[in-house]
Image (tube, rainbow, N blue to C red; front, top):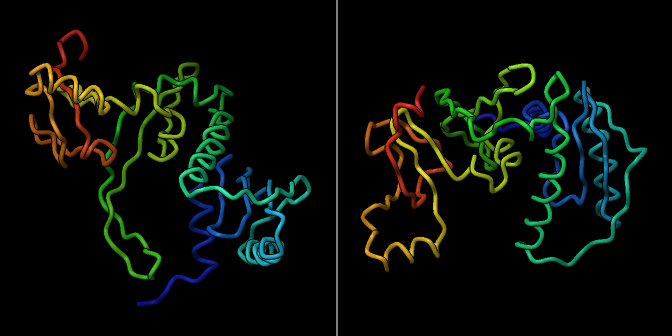
Length: 235
């Protein structure tokens, strides 16, 4: 089996990244933002010799695959000694802040869309390259969100949809054609069990237990309450 080259890996990452999306190559201390066309902006570099060398190597690699790199606004940042959890939280905050700048072609911010009305669409399966060079079949999904200004329908990567929605209702509820599932937190689960209403809880698997529909990955394994969609909600 042929292994993926660094050039192929970089091209694939950038092609899949939304315009305005953040890319931080693992372990290099570099932060890039994808711009329009084949261009990225280097926004930050950790102030270490390793990151300085990686910056040069990455610029050469990106230019080799036909991408331009704007380094004029790059800021040097001092290395913070954070736990893995603290680092993850900080990176997620950065990504969510960038997501607020994403816009429809009409100029409406995607964060202003009615995200709770997004429709999850399964697109079958596709080969995905693993870090060890092997491939496996993975499910492909997108979330269709609709602009409230121009009615444009925008298929959105699930990860990007999660950045836009955050902890909002859009990521806590899921509708099939008959059932609304609502994910609940641990204290609520405990209260419901203590109140002897635990029979109204479900732990979701791969398929909807009521109609057999395939469920998107983000709700699998969640503890949820559920209710049947009334006719007025369907219309």
